[in-house]
Length: 214
Image (cartoon, rainbow, N blue to C red):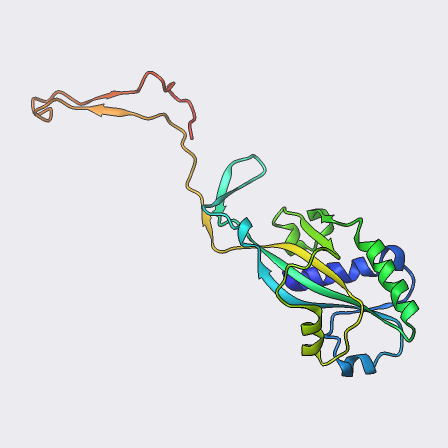
């Protein structure tokens, strides 16, 4: 699923205020060597942290229905993960970098929720939306200075972009066939009907004969 989120973000950053600009969008680690190879304006969206959103973890199973609404399978609820990206602009002039960051911000802010229809097939199949948070309050333990130090590069302006993404849990289970008859109580005599008297079947009064129950 992570690679699908990568492609979604690349598509977003190339659209909106940056549509038709020809600005390259890269997912590479913005190391000093990478920066030295840049010879054209670029936006970089570097995935630097993956963390489960534990507060959204669910227990039990979720019913999967067919076109008629019949339960056909059951699956474990998806787990939610926070994918944290460091978005930076790379040009020859600081003013141009600030313009690129402004354009990226203007492009991302209106897209806080990405519905299934706007997602790749793997994510869309879950029927859940992906939420985006840009330039919010920093909650991760890693500071920007630590990230840039680990990359071996100098501290520079950046946007924190966090995608909250569902990840499918496995396995799925086949659901049993539907119940088509009401409950039946069978009664025999105390001696086990040894006198040849057949047992009797009684249907509870609250269950209609032939009524479909679940």
